Length: 207
Image (tube, rainbow, N blue to C red; front, side, top):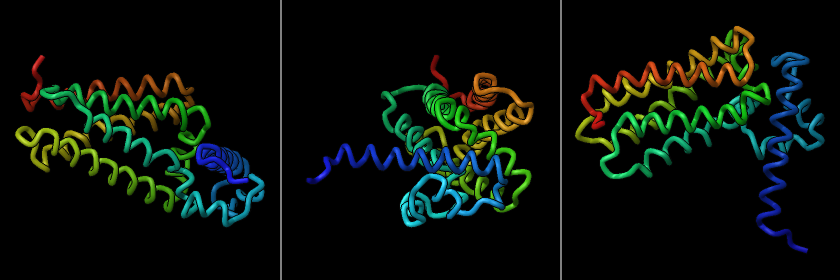
């Protein structure tokens, strides 16, 4: 009997989620460097081959929801209403990413683990920073395409870097303080509000 596409996709997502949750638990219990891909696969009751169908490397598990989160922001920008103020669209995109983090990486502990490993593991730090820079570049390019008369490449990069950087820094500081998901989410929202004032200098708002 052939499985329905919807059922196959649900099973695929369930396996992916199980791998993420298992990896987060093992990284926390044994340490990141002491946990192998084989360890994660065995604990999740799947093969190493199944692991690599979902993640190319161990580091990628730490950033499992990152690509989808960036796509969410790009979709918000791409679906902007005609003549929508730049700050309004950027704020909506950033808040969508924060909400997604609040429903995923914060409650499952992956955000706190990632923040800790950025200090303890140079390999993780490099991988996370590369992912952040790539995300910023993609969002900046999308924003520049949506507002070509307001933003050049440098300005778009500066605005997005200011907002995303502020949100990331606030999240890490809040996590290092041992604060819970609600407090971390609020810290990210406050940081976004502060950084979004950089858009005011562009004279791009039309309140």
